[in-house]
Length: 490
Image 1 (spheres, rainbow, N blue to C red):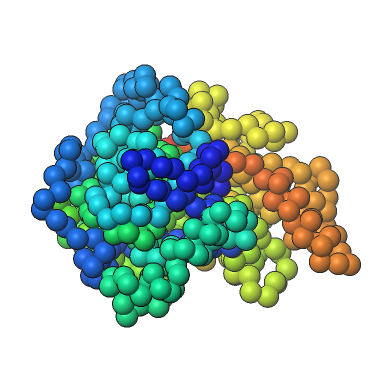
Image 2: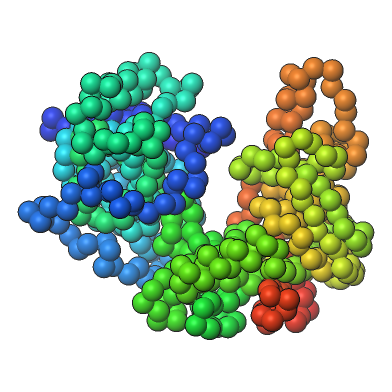
């Protein structure tokens, strides 16, 4: 990830020292994404003491409900375009939602004096209180009892800060971490309330620019509800939205907006995921108990998912088998040959028929990207039974077969590169054999570079049906009766 310049320079504000730390080594998974989404453990009260004498200067973010009309999306506070003395943008509120995501900015702090978390972040990062409260509401602020170990790329100054705050003589004085190993104390959790108190030595990670989903505010969410029962809700997820949110934004998610549309007091829970750029059937649980039950059905392979994919080239009927590199980072690399430790990916192509490409106005509506594919008159609509559920699986497998999904700005450029220059894919049919590991690693890096960015809104992929318990529960989204993503090619 890219961080703002000067992000790691210590700041002195009214005798408050905020030690900005390092860029987390995302490639090597220094911070587990599973840790990031945990809520506070029962022991959090040792760290975050809810003191009544701390008065909030503004409304609590916990009681706020965000709303924004699509017409107001461009009504951005004029101060958001000005620059403050520290070189960053001036901030007002997270709402209204901007049409475009800003540059990533993630700040890493170590608290030096106990106090309200909002107040500390405001002083350390020169942010207004309401903006920080919005970040907490979005789930964009994390804490750990003990500062995580810096990556190899950390500067001497950053390493010095880490060594100071994790010195055994310092840690022994902190009652909040007694009985915990250092590794346990370094786990990250979300800050969930704006009035929380953080103690000295606490590590904070602040996602100043959360990933935004403006399309959430354009959707008639009630019209996307397929079924409602006492246990679950089935949603026809719109493309360009996140099922359960991201690491830094749980507010602008399908689960949140569907909960509000139905007027539920308890939040709907995510049971499974589909890509942001994919639309279609998603099951949301109404309780933790049913969420656990549905997870069990997925593990036991009792859940069947059918997809419609609009491929740029014909795809053979039958089962496609690949193996996916077990690295939780896009693009997802797949190999036709077995690779030790890689994950099995299988899908079954049930049908493949030639259809006209989407009309130009539909392509504009869904922000379908051209991606440079030569043949633009026809596409191939494939009905797919997903046998294993890996992230980006259908998109990665079809691209590996030289039949990328229409509009897939991430995988189509790589597929084109392999067609133009066979052997570019070090895991494809025409792969080259390398005599040393360095050459092989270089080829993999070059192959990754051939991939593009994640699609902005939609690709030609729809989760058209989901069923479980042998078909006892079978839900189909209404648009699947037509064709790929809301009947766009009719």
